[in-house]
Length: 170
Image (cartoon, rainbow, N blue to C red; front, side, top):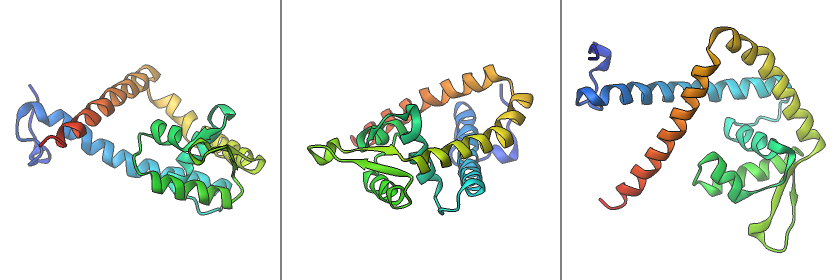
C-alpha cells in the first residue's frame, strides 16, 4: 500500500490507484521542462542560431539515419499533431542553413535533409551531450532501468493517445 503524503493530496489523485500515475505525470512535466532547457543550453554551446527545444527536436530527427524525412514522418515520429508549428520549424531550420528542402512532385512528398552545416551542428550537439550528460548518467543510472522507463513511457504514450480518442466521444 502506498503511503500518502501531503504532497500527494491533489484533486488529480482522487483514489489510491491514481496516485502513482499522478506522481509520474508531474514528474514527466518537470522532466519535460528541464529537458527542453537542457536541449537549448546544449545547442547554444555549439551554435547560436537561437533554436527552440522543438526546433532542435526536428533538426535531430531529420539528421537521424542521415535519410530525408517528410513532414508527415517528422510529425508521426515526434507524436505531434501541430503541423503548422512543424512547418514553421522546418522553415526556420532551412533559413539557418541547417536543413535543405528536397522538392518533389507534390508538396506532401517534399522531404528535408540536413546540410553540411546541419551535420556539423548536430555532431557538435551530440558530442556536447555525450560529454556533459551521457557520461555522468552512465555512472549514476542503471541502463536497464532507463530501458524499462523508455518502454513504460512508450506504452503510456499509446494509452494517452487512446484516451484522446475517447474524449471525442464524450
